[in-house]
Amino acid sequence: MDIPQSNFAASLEALHGLDSYSRDSIIMELPVAVYTTDKSGILTFYNKAAAELWGRMPEIGKERWSGALRLYWPDGTAMQHDECPLATTLREEREVRDVDAIAERPDGSRIAFMPFPVLLRNKQGEIVGALNMLRDITEQRRDEAMAERLAAIVESSDDAIISKDLSGMVTTWNKAAERIFGYTAEDMIGRSITTVIPPDRLYEEPGIVERVRNGQRIDHYETVRQRKDGTRIHVSLTVSPVKNASGRVVGASKIARDITDKKESEERILMLMREVNHRVKNQYAVILSMIRETSSRTTDVVEFEQQIRERIMALARSHDLLVHATWRGATLSDLLLEQIKPFGDENRLTMTGPSMVLQPNAVQYLGIAFHELATNSAKYGVFSSETGEINVDWFVGDEGKTFYLAWTETGGPPVKLGRTRGFGKTVLERITPLSLGGEGMLEQSVNRIVWTVRAPMENIRAASV
Image 1 (cartoon, rainbow, N blue to C red):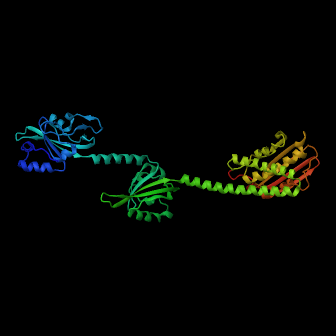
Image 2: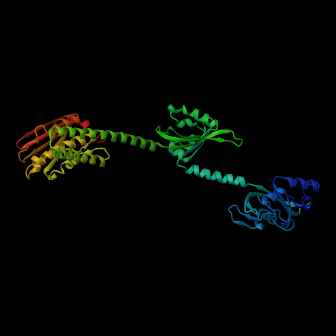
Protein backbone atom coordinates (compact mmCIF):
# COMPACT_ATOMS: atom_id res chain seq x y z
CA MET A 1 0.00 0.00 0.00
CA ASP A 2 1.51 3.36 -1.06
CA ILE A 3 1.26 6.00 1.68
CA PRO A 4 1.33 9.69 0.72
CA GLN A 5 4.36 11.65 1.98
CA SER A 6 3.85 14.38 4.59
CA ASN A 7 5.46 16.79 7.00
CA PHE A 8 5.85 14.00 9.59
CA ALA A 9 9.50 14.86 10.10
CA ALA A 10 8.56 18.40 11.03
CA SER A 11 6.04 17.12 13.54
CA LEU A 12 8.75 15.17 15.41
CA GLU A 13 11.55 17.71 15.10
CA ALA A 14 11.13 18.83 18.68
CA LEU A 15 11.64 15.30 19.97
CA HIS A 16 14.30 13.70 17.86
CA GLY A 17 17.50 14.65 16.17
CA LEU A 18 17.08 12.19 13.30
CA ASP A 19 17.00 13.49 9.81
CA SER A 20 13.61 13.51 8.17
CA TYR A 21 14.35 10.68 5.73
CA SER A 22 15.50 8.28 8.43
CA ARG A 23 12.58 9.19 10.68
CA ASP A 24 9.99 8.70 7.92
CA SER A 25 11.51 5.37 6.85
CA ILE A 26 11.64 3.93 10.36
CA ILE A 27 8.11 4.91 11.35
CA MET A 28 6.64 3.95 7.98
CA GLU A 29 7.91 0.34 8.30
CA LEU A 30 6.94 -0.24 11.92
CA PRO A 31 4.63 -3.30 12.28
CA VAL A 32 2.40 -1.35 14.67
CA ALA A 33 -0.06 1.34 13.59
CA VAL A 34 1.24 4.88 14.18
CA TYR A 35 -0.15 8.26 13.09
CA THR A 36 0.28 11.92 14.03
CA THR A 37 -1.92 14.99 14.07
CA ASP A 38 -1.40 18.67 14.57
CA LYS A 39 -2.68 20.55 17.62
CA SER A 40 -6.19 20.76 16.15
CA GLY A 41 -6.31 17.01 15.46
CA ILE A 42 -5.78 17.17 11.68
CA LEU A 43 -3.92 14.08 10.42
CA THR A 44 -0.33 14.88 9.44
CA PHE A 45 1.07 11.38 8.98
CA TYR A 46 0.23 7.64 9.20
CA ASN A 47 2.23 4.53 8.43
CA LYS A 48 1.40 1.39 6.48
CA ALA A 49 0.27 -0.53 9.56
CA ALA A 50 -2.24 2.24 10.42
CA ALA A 51 -3.70 2.17 6.91
CA GLU A 52 -4.03 -1.61 7.11
CA LEU A 53 -5.72 -1.41 10.50
CA TRP A 54 -8.23 1.20 9.24
CA GLY A 55 -8.68 -0.55 5.89
CA ARG A 56 -8.41 2.78 4.09
CA MET A 57 -6.05 5.69 3.40
CA PRO A 58 -7.52 8.86 4.88
CA GLU A 59 -6.60 12.22 3.30
CA ILE A 60 -3.77 13.93 5.17
CA GLY A 61 -4.41 17.54 6.08
CA LYS A 62 -8.20 17.13 6.00
CA GLU A 63 -9.43 14.33 8.25
CA ARG A 64 -9.32 14.73 12.02
CA TRP A 65 -8.64 12.62 15.08
CA SER A 66 -8.53 9.18 13.43
CA GLY A 67 -8.36 7.49 10.05
CA ALA A 68 -11.05 4.94 10.99
CA LEU A 69 -14.29 5.10 9.02
CA ARG A 70 -16.33 4.67 12.22
CA LEU A 71 -15.46 4.22 15.87
CA TYR A 72 -17.25 2.35 18.67
CA TRP A 73 -16.90 1.90 22.38
CA PRO A 74 -16.11 -1.65 23.62
CA ASP A 75 -19.82 -2.26 24.33
CA GLY A 76 -20.65 -1.55 20.68
CA THR A 77 -22.18 1.92 21.05
CA ALA A 78 -21.04 4.56 18.59
CA MET A 79 -18.05 6.74 19.48
CA GLN A 80 -17.76 10.16 17.87
CA HIS A 81 -14.33 10.89 16.45
CA ASP A 82 -13.90 13.90 18.77
CA GLU A 83 -14.51 11.51 21.71
CA CYS A 84 -11.61 9.26 20.81
CA PRO A 85 -8.64 9.01 23.25
CA LEU A 86 -6.38 11.12 21.02
CA ALA A 87 -8.96 13.95 20.92
CA THR A 88 -9.27 13.78 24.71
CA THR A 89 -5.48 13.86 25.04
CA LEU A 90 -5.19 17.03 22.96
CA ARG A 91 -8.24 18.69 24.49
CA GLU A 92 -7.32 17.96 28.12
CA GLU A 93 -3.54 17.96 27.57
CA ARG A 94 -3.16 14.57 29.30
CA GLU A 95 -2.20 11.20 27.92
CA VAL A 96 -5.18 8.81 28.04
CA ARG A 97 -4.45 5.18 28.89
CA ASP A 98 -6.29 1.88 29.44
CA VAL A 99 -9.12 2.66 27.05
CA ASP A 100 -10.25 0.20 24.37
CA ALA A 101 -12.03 1.14 21.18
CA ILE A 102 -13.28 -0.52 18.00
CA ALA A 103 -12.61 0.65 14.45
CA GLU A 104 -14.94 -0.26 11.60
CA ARG A 105 -13.43 -0.72 8.14
CA PRO A 106 -15.16 0.11 4.86
CA ASP A 107 -15.84 -3.61 4.29
CA GLY A 108 -17.80 -3.76 7.56
CA SER A 109 -15.22 -5.71 9.54
CA ARG A 110 -14.33 -4.42 12.99
CA ILE A 111 -10.95 -4.27 14.74
CA ALA A 112 -10.55 -3.92 18.49
CA PHE A 113 -7.55 -1.76 19.40
CA MET A 114 -5.88 -0.08 22.34
CA PRO A 115 -4.60 3.48 21.66
CA PHE A 116 -1.52 5.05 23.23
CA PRO A 117 -1.73 8.81 22.43
CA VAL A 118 1.32 10.95 23.24
CA LEU A 119 1.49 14.76 23.19
CA LEU A 120 4.12 16.28 20.88
CA ARG A 121 5.92 19.43 22.05
CA ASN A 122 8.41 21.81 20.46
CA LYS A 123 11.70 22.92 21.98
CA GLN A 124 9.88 25.52 24.03
CA GLY A 125 7.60 22.82 25.50
CA GLU A 126 4.53 24.00 23.64
CA ILE A 127 2.07 21.36 22.42
CA VAL A 128 2.22 21.15 18.66
CA GLY A 129 0.29 17.95 18.04
CA ALA A 130 -0.03 14.30 19.06
CA LEU A 131 1.27 10.89 18.12
CA ASN A 132 -0.96 7.86 18.50
CA MET A 133 0.07 4.21 18.45
CA LEU A 134 -2.74 1.65 17.93
CA ARG A 135 -2.26 -1.92 19.11
CA ASP A 136 -4.56 -4.46 17.48
CA ILE A 137 -6.13 -6.47 20.31
CA THR A 138 -8.84 -8.22 18.27
CA GLU A 139 -7.42 -11.69 18.80
CA GLN A 140 -6.71 -10.96 22.45
CA ARG A 141 -10.30 -9.84 23.09
CA ARG A 142 -11.64 -12.79 21.11
CA ASP A 143 -9.52 -15.18 23.16
CA GLU A 144 -10.58 -13.48 26.39
CA ALA A 145 -14.27 -13.70 25.41
CA MET A 146 -13.88 -17.35 24.50
CA ALA A 147 -12.03 -18.03 27.75
CA GLU A 148 -14.86 -16.35 29.67
CA ARG A 149 -17.46 -18.40 27.84
CA LEU A 150 -15.51 -21.59 28.42
CA ALA A 151 -15.07 -20.72 32.08
CA ALA A 152 -18.83 -20.16 32.39
CA ILE A 153 -19.54 -23.48 30.65
CA VAL A 154 -17.06 -25.31 32.88
CA GLU A 155 -18.53 -23.83 36.07
CA SER A 156 -22.15 -24.47 35.04
CA SER A 157 -21.50 -28.00 33.73
CA ASP A 158 -23.13 -30.98 35.44
CA ASP A 159 -20.00 -32.99 34.64
CA ALA A 160 -16.76 -32.81 36.57
CA ILE A 161 -14.20 -30.95 34.41
CA ILE A 162 -10.67 -31.30 35.68
CA SER A 163 -7.24 -30.32 34.39
CA LYS A 164 -4.02 -31.98 35.45
CA ASP A 165 -0.37 -31.96 34.42
CA LEU A 166 1.43 -35.03 33.14
CA SER A 167 2.54 -35.97 36.65
CA GLY A 168 -1.11 -36.25 37.63
CA MET A 169 -1.28 -33.09 39.76
CA VAL A 170 -4.66 -31.35 39.56
CA THR A 171 -4.54 -27.78 38.21
CA THR A 172 -8.28 -26.98 37.89
CA TRP A 173 -11.37 -28.43 39.60
CA ASN A 174 -14.89 -27.17 38.82
CA LYS A 175 -18.03 -27.02 40.97
CA ALA A 176 -19.42 -30.24 39.51
CA ALA A 177 -16.21 -32.03 40.51
CA GLU A 178 -16.77 -30.80 44.06
CA ARG A 179 -20.34 -32.13 43.99
CA ILE A 180 -19.51 -35.48 42.40
CA PHE A 181 -16.34 -36.33 44.34
CA GLY A 182 -16.94 -34.41 47.57
CA TYR A 183 -13.57 -32.62 47.48
CA THR A 184 -13.37 -28.83 47.14
CA ALA A 185 -11.05 -27.10 44.68
CA GLU A 186 -8.87 -26.11 47.65
CA ASP A 187 -8.66 -29.79 48.60
CA MET A 188 -7.61 -30.97 45.15
CA ILE A 189 -5.62 -28.31 43.29
CA GLY A 190 -1.96 -29.25 43.66
CA ARG A 191 -2.91 -32.76 44.76
CA SER A 192 -2.63 -36.00 42.77
CA ILE A 193 -5.65 -37.17 40.79
CA THR A 194 -5.05 -40.62 42.30
CA THR A 195 -6.83 -39.24 45.39
CA VAL A 196 -10.15 -40.14 43.73
CA ILE A 197 -8.97 -43.44 42.24
CA PRO A 198 -9.68 -46.58 44.31
CA PRO A 199 -6.56 -48.62 45.18
CA ASP A 200 -7.66 -51.50 42.95
CA ARG A 201 -7.96 -49.12 39.98
CA LEU A 202 -4.62 -47.30 40.28
CA TYR A 203 -3.24 -49.39 37.44
CA GLU A 204 -5.46 -47.40 35.02
CA GLU A 205 -3.76 -44.04 35.49
CA PRO A 206 -0.33 -44.79 33.93
CA GLY A 207 -2.05 -46.11 30.81
CA ILE A 208 -4.25 -43.01 30.55
CA VAL A 209 -1.25 -40.69 30.99
CA GLU A 210 0.77 -42.55 28.36
CA ARG A 211 -2.01 -42.28 25.79
CA VAL A 212 -2.46 -38.55 26.52
CA ARG A 213 1.31 -37.99 26.30
CA ASN A 214 1.14 -39.48 22.79
CA GLY A 215 -1.58 -36.99 21.86
CA GLN A 216 -4.43 -39.50 21.96
CA ARG A 217 -7.95 -38.66 23.15
CA ILE A 218 -9.85 -41.15 25.32
CA ASP A 219 -13.61 -41.20 24.82
CA HIS A 220 -16.26 -42.53 27.23
CA TYR A 221 -14.02 -44.77 29.29
CA GLU A 222 -16.26 -46.33 31.96
CA THR A 223 -14.66 -47.04 35.29
CA VAL A 224 -15.06 -46.61 39.05
CA ARG A 225 -13.86 -43.69 41.19
CA GLN A 226 -14.04 -42.95 44.91
CA ARG A 227 -15.67 -40.04 46.73
CA LYS A 228 -14.20 -38.27 49.75
CA ASP A 229 -16.53 -40.23 52.04
CA GLY A 230 -15.22 -43.51 50.62
CA THR A 231 -18.25 -44.44 48.53
CA ARG A 232 -17.59 -45.67 45.02
CA ILE A 233 -19.28 -44.24 41.97
CA HIS A 234 -19.41 -45.28 38.33
CA VAL A 235 -18.04 -42.65 35.95
CA SER A 236 -17.58 -42.19 32.23
CA LEU A 237 -14.29 -40.44 31.44
CA THR A 238 -13.31 -38.40 28.41
CA VAL A 239 -9.65 -37.34 28.51
CA SER A 240 -8.02 -34.94 26.03
CA PRO A 241 -4.39 -33.82 25.75
CA VAL A 242 -3.62 -30.17 26.57
CA LYS A 243 -0.90 -28.59 24.41
CA ASN A 244 1.18 -25.44 24.84
CA ALA A 245 1.78 -22.79 22.17
CA SER A 246 4.50 -24.91 20.54
CA GLY A 247 2.20 -27.93 20.28
CA ARG A 248 3.82 -29.98 23.03
CA VAL A 249 1.50 -31.97 25.32
CA VAL A 250 1.80 -30.52 28.82
CA GLY A 251 -1.25 -31.93 30.56
CA ALA A 252 -4.72 -33.36 30.23
CA SER A 253 -8.30 -32.15 30.45
CA LYS A 254 -10.63 -34.71 31.96
CA ILE A 255 -14.43 -34.78 31.90
CA ALA A 256 -15.99 -37.20 34.39
CA ARG A 257 -19.70 -37.96 34.17
CA ASP A 258 -21.39 -39.69 37.11
CA ILE A 259 -23.22 -42.70 35.64
CA THR A 260 -23.95 -44.44 38.93
CA ASP A 261 -27.73 -44.07 38.51
CA LYS A 262 -27.49 -45.40 34.97
CA LYS A 263 -25.47 -48.42 36.08
CA GLU A 264 -27.83 -49.13 38.96
CA SER A 265 -30.79 -48.81 36.60
CA GLU A 266 -29.18 -51.28 34.20
CA GLU A 267 -28.56 -53.69 37.05
CA ARG A 268 -32.18 -53.34 38.24
CA ILE A 269 -33.42 -54.03 34.72
CA LEU A 270 -31.25 -57.15 34.47
CA MET A 271 -32.41 -58.31 37.88
CA LEU A 272 -36.02 -57.67 36.89
CA MET A 273 -35.55 -59.60 33.66
CA ARG A 274 -34.10 -62.54 35.59
CA GLU A 275 -36.98 -62.30 38.06
CA VAL A 276 -39.58 -62.17 35.28
CA ASN A 277 -37.93 -65.14 33.60
CA HIS A 278 -38.04 -67.05 36.88
CA ARG A 279 -41.67 -66.13 37.51
CA VAL A 280 -42.77 -67.04 34.00
CA LYS A 281 -41.07 -70.44 34.25
CA ASN A 282 -42.69 -70.93 37.65
CA GLN A 283 -46.11 -70.07 36.23
CA TYR A 284 -45.56 -72.50 33.37
CA ALA A 285 -44.70 -75.25 35.87
CA VAL A 286 -47.86 -74.53 37.88
CA ILE A 287 -50.05 -74.51 34.77
CA LEU A 288 -48.52 -77.74 33.49
CA SER A 289 -49.15 -79.31 36.90
CA MET A 290 -52.76 -78.15 36.75
CA ILE A 291 -53.22 -79.61 33.31
CA ARG A 292 -51.58 -82.90 34.26
CA GLU A 293 -53.52 -83.35 37.48
CA THR A 294 -56.84 -82.18 36.02
CA SER A 295 -56.58 -84.40 32.95
CA SER A 296 -55.86 -87.41 35.15
CA ARG A 297 -59.06 -86.78 37.12
CA THR A 298 -61.57 -86.26 34.30
CA THR A 299 -62.25 -87.47 30.78
CA ASP A 300 -64.97 -84.90 30.12
CA VAL A 301 -63.54 -82.30 27.71
CA VAL A 302 -65.99 -79.57 28.73
CA GLU A 303 -65.34 -80.12 32.43
CA PHE A 304 -61.59 -80.23 31.81
CA GLU A 305 -61.67 -76.92 29.91
CA GLN A 306 -63.77 -75.23 32.59
CA GLN A 307 -61.55 -76.37 35.44
CA ILE A 308 -58.35 -75.36 33.65
CA ARG A 309 -59.81 -71.94 32.79
CA GLU A 310 -60.92 -71.33 36.38
CA ARG A 311 -57.56 -72.34 37.81
CA ILE A 312 -55.59 -70.22 35.36
CA MET A 313 -57.86 -67.26 36.19
CA ALA A 314 -57.10 -67.86 39.88
CA LEU A 315 -53.39 -67.66 39.06
CA ALA A 316 -54.06 -64.50 37.10
CA ARG A 317 -55.76 -62.87 40.09
CA SER A 318 -52.75 -63.63 42.29
CA HIS A 319 -50.48 -62.37 39.54
CA ASP A 320 -52.42 -59.07 39.35
CA LEU A 321 -51.83 -58.49 43.04
CA LEU A 322 -48.11 -58.99 42.53
CA VAL A 323 -47.99 -56.69 39.50
CA HIS A 324 -49.75 -53.89 41.42
CA ALA A 325 -47.14 -54.25 44.16
CA THR A 326 -44.28 -54.38 41.57
CA TRP A 327 -43.61 -58.02 42.55
CA ARG A 328 -42.74 -57.13 46.13
CA GLY A 329 -45.59 -59.35 47.36
CA ALA A 330 -49.21 -59.07 48.50
CA THR A 331 -50.97 -59.10 51.86
CA LEU A 332 -52.56 -62.34 53.02
CA SER A 333 -55.94 -60.66 53.54
CA ASP A 334 -55.93 -59.14 50.01
CA LEU A 335 -55.08 -62.54 48.55
CA LEU A 336 -57.97 -64.24 50.40
CA LEU A 337 -60.52 -61.63 49.33
CA GLU A 338 -59.31 -61.70 45.72
CA GLN A 339 -59.66 -65.48 45.47
CA ILE A 340 -63.12 -65.81 47.06
CA LYS A 341 -64.58 -62.83 45.19
CA PRO A 342 -65.83 -64.89 42.17
CA PHE A 343 -67.51 -67.51 44.39
CA GLY A 344 -69.27 -65.98 47.39
CA ASP A 345 -70.05 -63.10 49.71
CA GLU A 346 -66.90 -61.86 51.42
CA ASN A 347 -69.04 -60.97 54.46
CA ARG A 348 -69.31 -64.71 55.11
CA LEU A 349 -65.53 -64.78 55.58
CA THR A 350 -63.83 -63.91 58.88
CA MET A 351 -60.08 -63.31 58.90
CA THR A 352 -57.93 -63.24 62.02
CA GLY A 353 -54.19 -62.77 62.12
CA PRO A 354 -51.34 -60.24 62.01
CA SER A 355 -50.85 -58.02 58.97
CA MET A 356 -48.48 -59.89 56.71
CA VAL A 357 -47.03 -59.34 53.24
CA LEU A 358 -46.40 -62.61 51.45
CA GLN A 359 -43.49 -63.16 49.12
CA PRO A 360 -44.40 -63.84 45.44
CA ASN A 361 -44.00 -67.62 45.62
CA ALA A 362 -46.29 -67.83 48.65
CA VAL A 363 -48.85 -65.59 46.92
CA GLN A 364 -49.05 -67.94 43.96
CA TYR A 365 -49.33 -71.23 45.85
CA LEU A 366 -51.55 -70.04 48.69
CA GLY A 367 -53.70 -68.37 46.02
CA ILE A 368 -54.16 -71.74 44.28
CA ALA A 369 -55.13 -73.35 47.60
CA PHE A 370 -57.65 -70.60 48.46
CA HIS A 371 -59.12 -70.95 44.98
CA GLU A 372 -59.67 -74.69 45.40
CA LEU A 373 -61.25 -74.20 48.83
CA ALA A 374 -63.52 -71.41 47.56
CA THR A 375 -64.49 -73.47 44.50
CA ASN A 376 -65.39 -76.45 46.68
CA SER A 377 -67.38 -74.20 49.01
CA ALA A 378 -69.31 -72.76 46.07
CA LYS A 379 -70.19 -76.26 44.88
CA TYR A 380 -70.81 -78.09 48.13
CA GLY A 381 -70.33 -75.84 51.17
CA VAL A 382 -71.08 -72.46 52.74
CA PHE A 383 -71.02 -70.47 49.51
CA SER A 384 -73.62 -72.85 48.02
CA SER A 385 -76.19 -71.98 50.73
CA GLU A 386 -77.30 -69.11 52.96
CA THR A 387 -76.00 -70.63 56.18
CA GLY A 388 -72.60 -71.21 57.68
CA GLU A 389 -69.35 -69.29 57.79
CA ILE A 390 -65.70 -69.53 56.88
CA ASN A 391 -62.98 -68.58 59.33
CA VAL A 392 -59.39 -68.15 58.24
CA ASP A 393 -56.90 -67.49 61.00
CA TRP A 394 -53.13 -67.44 60.98
CA PHE A 395 -50.31 -66.73 63.40
CA VAL A 396 -46.55 -66.93 63.72
CA GLY A 397 -45.03 -69.32 66.25
CA ASP A 398 -41.74 -70.83 67.32
CA GLU A 399 -40.28 -67.39 68.10
CA GLY A 400 -41.12 -66.06 64.66
CA LYS A 401 -39.81 -69.02 62.71
CA THR A 402 -43.02 -70.86 61.72
CA PHE A 403 -46.19 -69.80 59.92
CA TYR A 404 -49.51 -71.47 60.75
CA LEU A 405 -52.81 -71.02 58.85
CA ALA A 406 -56.20 -72.73 59.16
CA TRP A 407 -59.22 -72.47 56.84
CA THR A 408 -62.29 -73.64 58.80
CA GLU A 409 -65.69 -73.97 57.15
CA THR A 410 -68.67 -74.69 59.45
CA GLY A 411 -72.44 -74.39 59.73
CA GLY A 412 -73.26 -74.97 56.08
CA PRO A 413 -74.75 -77.97 54.33
CA PRO A 414 -72.99 -81.30 54.66
CA VAL A 415 -69.64 -80.58 53.09
CA LYS A 416 -67.29 -82.63 51.01
CA LEU A 417 -64.20 -81.94 49.00
CA GLY A 418 -65.28 -82.94 45.54
CA ARG A 419 -63.84 -86.25 44.39
CA THR A 420 -61.94 -88.44 46.78
CA ARG A 421 -58.70 -87.90 44.83
CA GLY A 422 -59.44 -84.68 42.99
CA PHE A 423 -57.01 -81.95 42.01
CA GLY A 424 -58.16 -79.83 44.96
CA LYS A 425 -56.99 -82.39 47.50
CA THR A 426 -53.70 -82.72 45.66
CA VAL A 427 -53.19 -78.96 45.83
CA LEU A 428 -54.09 -78.73 49.52
CA GLU A 429 -52.19 -81.77 50.74
CA ARG A 430 -49.17 -81.78 48.44
CA ILE A 431 -48.60 -79.00 45.91
CA THR A 432 -49.06 -75.92 48.10
CA PRO A 433 -47.43 -77.28 51.31
CA LEU A 434 -44.42 -78.73 49.48
CA SER A 435 -43.94 -75.54 47.43
CA LEU A 436 -43.75 -73.61 50.72
CA GLY A 437 -41.38 -76.12 52.29
CA GLY A 438 -43.98 -77.16 54.84
CA GLU A 439 -46.84 -79.55 55.55
CA GLY A 440 -50.58 -79.48 54.89
CA MET A 441 -53.52 -81.40 56.29
CA LEU A 442 -57.16 -81.63 55.18
CA GLU A 443 -59.86 -82.81 57.61
CA GLN A 444 -63.59 -83.05 56.98
CA SER A 445 -66.69 -84.16 58.82
CA VAL A 446 -70.39 -83.85 58.09
CA ASN A 447 -70.67 -80.10 58.79
CA ARG A 448 -67.06 -79.06 58.94
CA ILE A 449 -63.97 -78.88 56.79
CA VAL A 450 -60.56 -77.71 57.99
CA TRP A 451 -57.40 -77.16 56.00
CA THR A 452 -54.22 -76.35 57.90
CA VAL A 453 -50.78 -75.53 56.61
CA ARG A 454 -47.50 -75.04 58.44
CA ALA A 455 -44.34 -73.66 56.78
CA PRO A 456 -41.09 -71.82 57.61
CA MET A 457 -41.61 -68.04 57.85
CA GLU A 458 -38.64 -67.49 55.56
CA ASN A 459 -40.71 -69.04 52.75
CA ILE A 460 -43.82 -67.01 53.57
CA ARG A 461 -43.12 -63.41 54.50
CA ALA A 462 -41.62 -60.95 52.02
CA ALA A 463 -38.02 -60.07 52.85
CA SER A 464 -38.72 -56.32 52.94
CA VAL A 465 -41.16 -56.70 55.83
